[in-house]
Image (cartoon, rainbow, N blue to C red; front, side):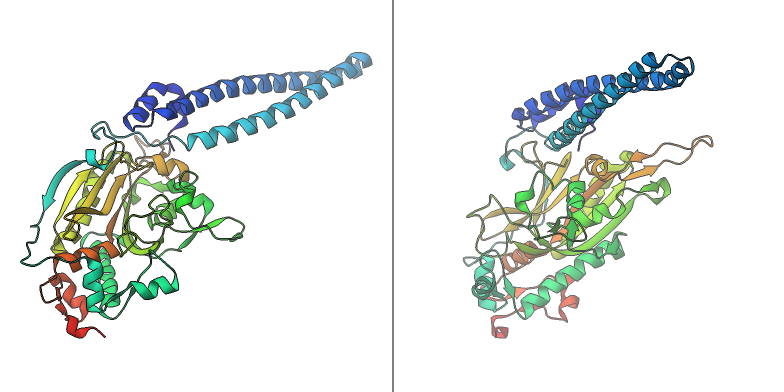
Length: 441
């Protein structure tokens, strides 16, 4: 969440950011937060005055008894009791007010960087660069569903029988290709780009999703478990970003430990609320899919460069696979709730005659770290110990496995129905260079 002091000390800046994000209706939330801050200040002032009065009277009561002034002592005791009763009421009012304040603060999104283009939707995103040649075919290219079904590696009918729409069954070379992509992504991240590979739980507590900002705003997009797990509400993770970014929550790191770089493979579970009718057939938009996530934790001064670096790491994977793509800087209206800046990597899909997102690389600034109390202590200055500061967090997909498979099947298809595998994948596929219809079961 945003620094509450920013909202109270510079509400105009926050409102301007909300206007740029196409969220002027949230101005009323800022105003309500300001009103709550004023009321809270009044309540605290009254409470503190009563506490001070109680302390003064408590010291006087014993002396009044010793002086034989029993009536005055009893009156003072009654005044203290009345003050205590009022303090209890004030504490209850403060607790209710602060709970409401905390809830409202989660309604305010991050402030976009100044150079993020103003816009309403993905149509207003700014394309920065592209890479690779869009393939030309002397036949009508087919979708990944048609290619995968013909090859016998993608079975949507049986997956529908098991679970319904937005799930898939991969068979034979298809299952092996999924596994090969995961291994390739992790090897590039760890061996070439210096990320530490981690494996994390696929179920997390509610507070962990609050840390990265998925809750309370986006609960409808999550799969919640029934009952409690170890005393807390629990959910299936929507992305490895959630457990990995929270690895160091409530810790104070040494400056020398930064930056931290983690790569994690996990399944991801999403309800896809609000996407009814979009990409129902195939494996572009699923309730369960695999992804390798890249996460960095940095000093504030380094996060902008780290964001560019992480985006380049994700691009390198697409280049290794020879897949044509472009990089877009998201506009304010398309920017995610938690991000202050985001690049989308969009891969070319022949069946759609356009680019589709395959990775989002975001810089969240201190937005997530504040929720998690993820901090670092700067190195001493002139021998003096420094106060802890909030870290910055960055993450991006490196890459989404299913969409990468879609891009390979569609861009590398041939007229005879076979698919040529990228050279980088051949060692991971046991030397298989071509997926052939003759190999289908």
